[in-house]
Length: 459
Image 1 (cartoon, helix red, strand yellow):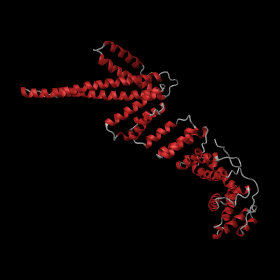
Image 2: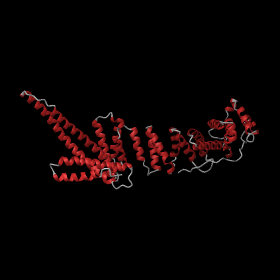
Image 3: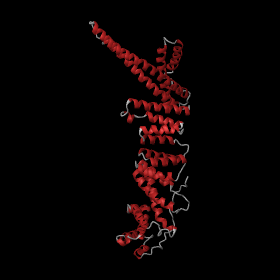
Image 4: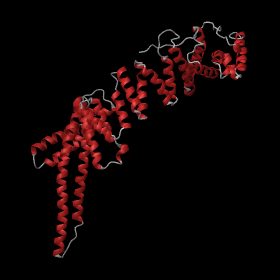
């Protein structure tokens, strides 16, 4: 981590020996002993376009107004002095980026310290009262000056960044809902790979911002930095969040297949991809049933692979089981719907007295009934198979989660739903096999009683 520093006010007397331009010589009579007279004089001098064209004029205005902004009594009497000092310094900086006039003697950097300290102290005051816009305005000024002081190593401590001020500026901007500004300051720290638990959330904030703005270049840059500085962090969550927001469903599948084939996916990332494929609410209306089923199966595949990588991920097994339980339920609905159609055909059957008409009507009804019965045979097989897969993964989730302590709300919900779903499937299976295989019936009945008896027991 780069060294953190707080700037202290340079207390040495200000060296004015560099005031050689005759236009500014009069200021030597008043500065620094008679500041108000010095202010009156510089205000008068700077009305002259010739003075405005000279960096020394703006430097003098910076020096004098910085003193006013730092002195609470003078600042109250002449409000806005800090803004004038900052603007004057920026004009000086633009005209003399080498800071030649200031760097002849270390004590000549005093006005920067004054502006810095005024900004920091006021920024902290407003920060403590949660006046975020004002706090940010002052901290951004302090951070601006702190960056110059650090760049020139004026404190001679080798610090590369005024860490505390930059953090405060970022926090104030974040709380003021100035997201772009907050990211700008947090990036300064991330670019220098500033680490430690106190700064981890800054990297998270940056990644969420670039995921929301779908900025792949910056997202990937700061994801790499975050992984380097905090190798144990859960950065895969942010990576998948970016993919979820920036990629189409087809692009997500293509990336998943590529990384899956390369063996590059961890259990956590499989789990996150599974959730991504499951959560297609925004695009669901534009997908036909075939496509929806495809993405649900893709989700189940990812959940299963997550569990196979880490069999403590009961939630992954549960999700896979639920996907197939929902498929089982769809088949069950179709099967029951067909039964109702058979009943309706029988109820609405026309009684024909004419033998020819009766034969034709019976043949038509038989054709409809045979088609429905044939469809139900296939549906019943599909429902049975979906039930088997659901049972496999719901039981895996039950085994993985039943002994977890303490149980959070999600774990308890998964367990209670898993045993209910299992009881439902085993109830269906035992009835289907009842008259065909007594041994299988007993096995299914035992399972049904086990899971039915666990209903609502996970508190």
